[in-house]
Length: 241
Image (tube, rainbow, N blue to C red; front, side, top):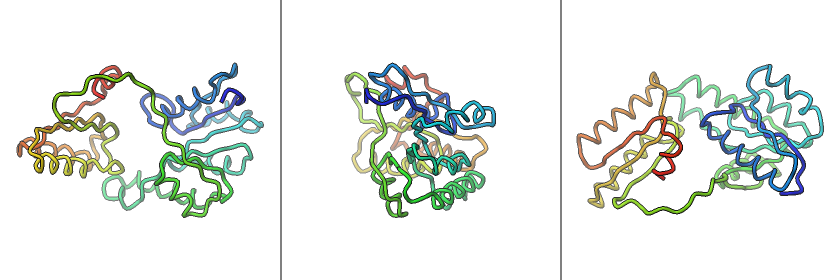
């Protein structure tokens, strides 16, 4: 990696705790290791951002684009020679439509955009499932590379069994099924099991409201304890892990 030149890593949402952004930052660190010229991470949202990036897009710098949903810029980059796409999967319309119709429509557009992309496009899939899905669609150049993980020192394990979920409360994450299976595990094993949920959903979303009702029902049944942590500071999340 030390011989790689400077490049650009692009994604739609840059900043905060966005999972693709955090992954892009780690990737930039790895690609720039041992090099005096660092890789830059930038978001593609908004015309101002695109105007600042235009010269780099037209030039010969290598670009890594994280694709996880519809983005008009992706169609332009697909015909650029020195571009590699990282695929993070797109939730099927059927799984989102019942709860989040606008998000489902955006996902449908993303899948259509993927279907229209040139088959010679170079892809890096972050899971075997994603890699298989790309290959089944006829893409000829697909490599698998798992998501990067920040190393953490080992710590003493908790005294009681627990499960940890970190992510959005969304249909794409199967949160309802997670609670159901965790409760079944507690019932079958007879263990005092705690499910820690670190994440939040949109208050007006029917899926999020149903998830909260399911947690309340778990508490009344008493088989599974669910602890919800919203906007947990990074240091506390590390300790929870």
